[in-house]
Length: 220
Image (cartoon, rainbow, N blue to C red; front, side, top):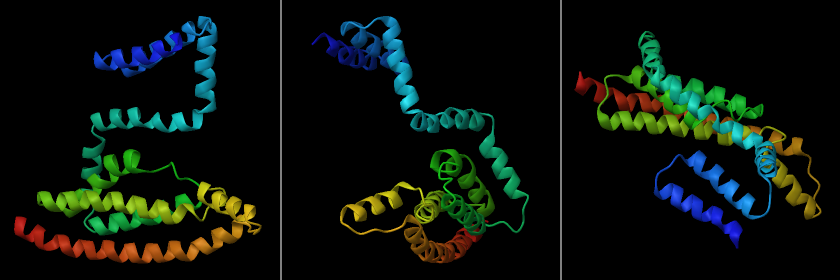
């Protein structure tokens, strides 16, 4: 029961609003020492856990970097860059991003873009700048459409990649049922869906520009 002292350390640490990382480390040390482990063995357990889940952990390392870049003016610089392009519109920018997102996902590069690392600091500010001036309601609509575009591109693009989790899950499930299907066959059948999604959402994006024009004219 002494190993449960780590839970008490977490509750107390969060209640006192201490640094979450320090609280978790202290809780791990408390539970490890209570279980009879030496400090070196506890440290080794931390290292093994991090190494085992390194692919999950590495994805979170980008968030502090994005925060630093935003503090240094990343969003403002993205807006200034787009404002210098006369032909740029919110719909065209999002359409280009949709194509890039689908192609990257189809190649298995699902982590090179996303809501936190691309949409919030870059894509949404660029789309907003291309549609300025905007009412507050339209600004929120542009941000929502930016997030939706990332979702559509990733969802319909990643199934083309052979080694994606969804493809492997389908292959494994069918194999257990006595149906042998090659991953390549499933990936090929995902291509028409990806093309249809691009055409449908692309048309929505181009029509989206038209819905912003009356609001822009009213503001002007």
